[in-house]
Length: 316
Image (cartoon, rainbow, N blue to C red; front, top):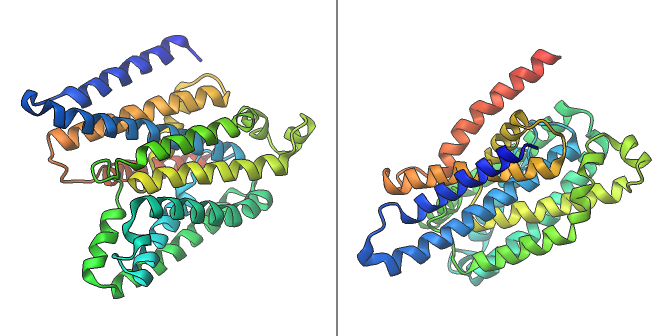
């Protein structure tokens, strides 16, 4: 990886971060606005790192560059959970209304379900892209269908609460959760650091990874757990951003001249942070938050996915 590219992106992200925090800052309200913008900046950095790490790791495990955890149903699991909890317990129940309790319940359930669903798929369908993608889409569609059915018969007032949680937002997040989220992500990254270093070998395939001394089944299971934790933290904190990982990782691949995943994750993280900072700055300062950032990212990400699928079919 070129040091020039790395430091250029770091400088760009720093400039964008400063613009986000200080652009149109009212001096009279500095003590009020500055800490709130700073907390959202920390959330943006966290989400960019989580998305870059989880997507690059997932693509290495599946050996396919158009697959992301969100495309295979992680976000759908999150929306289904939120809907079921409010439908069964109501919005006033402590489990639904307590942000901290809901955060940990969401984390535990999403990690458990993703491990149960995707570890078998990864082991048996790793080299069958279209079957893997089809099953993931079917699962995601099933989760969304159940979610839509419950939302149609739920109380309208509680439906509005679910809608607020369905779109990624850095403005409506619970500030107290940012410290918990950072602690979980840091601990998870440290615990699985040795597995992240093995991604270069795992991406070569099961046989090659085993020949290089890696316990493949154990490594893939641990990586799925790590991906589940990271995605769950990000989604529970700010909501689902489906196509961000697809965008940033594939853009990073197109500008990098190396296959090292450490470099890929770093560049993807910087690109992701830059995209979110630009989008959030424009939406907050000039569009009065009329459109959720997740909607804009998903619009561009969906078009980019179609472009990647067309390229894949042309190769075949």
